[in-house]
Amino acid sequence: MSDSAPPTAATTPESSSRLRIREVPDSDLDRAIDLASLVFLETYDDEMRARHRKFLLRCNRIGAYADGRLVGLLAAVRLRVSVPGGGLPCAGLTFVCVAPTHRRRGVLSELVAELWRRCAVAGRPLAALWASEAAIYGRYGFGAATRLCTVEIDSRRPLDLRVAPDPRPLRLLDPAEAPAVLGPRYEASRAERAGRLARDGYWWREQILPEQDEDDDELSPPRVVVLGDGPSLDYAVYRTRGGEDSPGVVEVYELEAGTGRAAAALWSYLAGIDLTGRVRAWGRPADDPLLLIAADRDQVRVTQEFPALWLRLADVGAALTGRSWAAPVDLVLDVSDGSIPANNGRFRLAAGPGGESYRASAEPADLSLDVRDLAACYLGGTRVGDLVRAGLVAEHTAGAARVLDAALYTDRLPFTSDEF
Ligand SMILES: CC(=O)SCCNC(=O)CCNC(=O)[C@H](O)C(C)(C)COP(=O)(O)OP(=O)(O)OC[C@H]1O[C@@H](n2cnc3c(N)ncnc32)[C@H](O)[C@@H]1OP(=O)(O)O
Image (cartoon, rainbow, N blue to C red; front, top):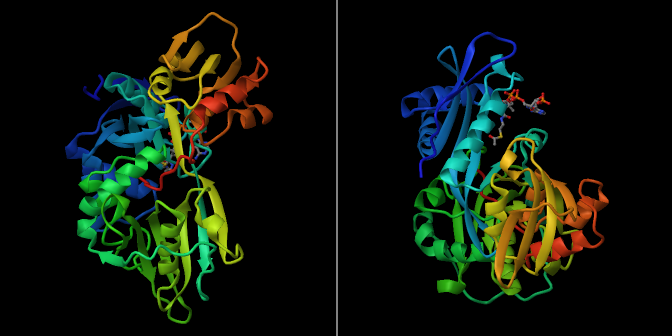
């Protein structure tokens, strides 16, 4: 299905110049990259421009043009996100930028409104993003659906764990082999956790394993260490930074371990790399087994915790009937959605052995909630009961939040560290 919709036009309040919202053609990619450079306060060399160009070519691109000049951009990469029981198409927002000359005139709001029209045309029930600032996206119906923590290991002494490491041999893998060797293992992990993105060869090469880290040119190329073989293979992706006067650092990007013993083997390897004294894993799930198997939590510390993937249910009905449920549920939800009218109103959510349905209802609501709060709970990472206690969700029928939480439940927390 096409992602394109006819161009829309709006007049900005502070200026008489006509703002046109339309597709950004390939011929405007240099202008799009110039705008991103201006807005994100970055200087891109030729290599980075080429990378951005390649990435933007994979995206749907919506532009805001004033007098023919590109003053706003929203790119949406076509993703497939794992949800309990399967996966759904998702628009991954990125390169969201508005020229400083046109900020706070509603340009972003126009771009987002156009995105919702396109999601409806293309049958994309979800949208997701990583936010540059957490204050921006709640108003557009996004909720923080996953949280990450940064874990640091003091590796100046041997890592003390309560579980014996898996004795299978470790080997270093050429990153070029990663899509073929790690791909099936990663794919299996998508069934275990919601929120994970489908990856193709491009995504592995450019997003997970680029030769040079985008933000830190002192880091080594990516290293891939593998434990075992075949479907039970476990692995870690990391880079190192040498230290001149102090021990070096191991930066961990990804670590997939199917058992506590495999996790022990991989973390012990990372903590044991000579000439390094610290392991830093910037984006780990809060239920990472490392935090339980560490014998000394002064040695393994959570140094930061933050909202990670922001999710938007662009089509609430398709999103709710597109996931599986951990327990039966039959509740009337009164959903407030200020920008997508089709989502707004009272709907009966029923899920059980007979399947899922979500239909408009005239019955009194059991729960009233904003679409952003429903998005935060959708993958099982936030509890509806907590939002009731926080005063964000209204519970009209006693126990309704507990019923919905039991149905939304997932064994493991939703998780992705794939930034885009
Ligand atoms: C997924 C990503 O790409 S994340 C990257 C986001 N981009 C950036 O951070 C780059 C720098 N910033 C920008 O380019 C722009 O300021 C943007 C894109 C964040 C906002 O664009 P604008 O066109 O100024 O936003 P717009 O005028 O539509 O604002 C809509 C509302 O959001 C609010 N808003 C916009 N930006 C922010 C912000 N950074 N913090 C808090 N509120 C904000 C506005 O005040 C406005 O509120 P209102 O409706 O109550 O009046």
